[in-house]
Image (spheres, rainbow, N blue to C red):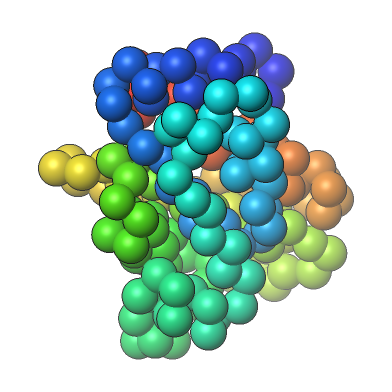
Length: 158
């Protein structure tokens, strides 16, 4: 998160009159924590969904079981449904989602350090991307994923 000022990100959301929602899996709420660590964040932070299990993704965010079955939890398809579900279920104007493999572990097809992100904003197409952070250790992947999610949010609020 070096170089990113979370207070500025929140000020941009305030300027645009947008509330923020988060939908997190591998970061376990770290994006929400980073946002709510800033005094005054309650003006723009609406809510955070920590949906670590597939059942939670389905129940809380409306991720389709079929999407999980076909693509797996670590996929842009699931990240997209997570972000859009958070947007629809929160009344926020922008939502960020994070789902990935922090480690240890992974597979040949879904390696440790792969994290999928999506950013949904009312009235705009949902943006998705996958970042390969590499096998840098669980804590480092989670920290890098949190920083990247905040950077995506900041860019969306520019």
